Every structure is written in structure tokens, then in C-alpha cells.
Amino acid sequence: QVQLVESGGGLVQPGGSLRLSCAASGSIFRSNVMGWYRQAPGKQREWVALITSARNTNYVNSVKGRFTISRDNAKNTVYLQMNSLKAEDTAVYYCNKVPAGAQNTWGQGTQVTVSS
Image 1 (spheres, one colour):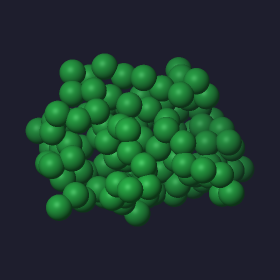
Image 2 (image 1 turned 60 degrees about the horizontal axis):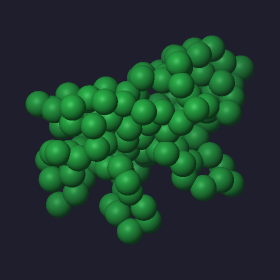
Image 3 (image 1 turned 45 degrees about the vertical axis):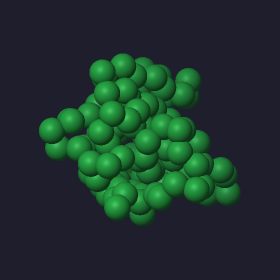
């Protein structure tokens, strides 16, 4: 059974930081590229960052230099450290394997709101 539980979101001022966590079931975490996605109001879900089992990483251009993805294979957990947050980062953030689409199981996500 696939299970994804995201946490760590909240309300933060522009320029602030948040750290998101995602606990994933072993079936989806092992040997998979894992990633973070986000969906802003009125927009489609977009991929944000990925990390391979060897800890190679990649990011969408809009977050490069500000976000850092990491994983703890022993805990089946993926993290997203978000610094220098901007209003346009406001969205519900999800984790999942990469690639993942509507046919995959998704968690409830965690809301990130960047506002003064």
C-alpha cells in the first residue's frame, strides 16, 4: 500500500524559510527517484525538485539556489528545505516518485503560504 504523508507547511513572510518532510511507504521509496511537486491555486501541479537514490538532485529553474531536497533512506523520508521564499512559492506541496501523474496515489499535501 502506497502511503505519502507530507508535513511542515505553514504561513511565512517573504524571505523566510520552511522545511517540508515527507514520510513515504517503503514500496514507493526504495530505489525510486523521489521528488516534490506543488500546485498553486488555479494552476496545474508542477514538479519542483527530485533526488535519486544516489542523492543526485535537480530543480525547476524558479527554485534553483533557494530550495534543497534531501532524503533519509533509513527513514523513508524526503525533505525540502525552502529558503528565500517568495509569494509565487505559495502552493500545496506534495511528494511522490518521479515521474508521477494523476494515476498515482498522492498524499494530502502540505500548504505553504508566503505572505506579509
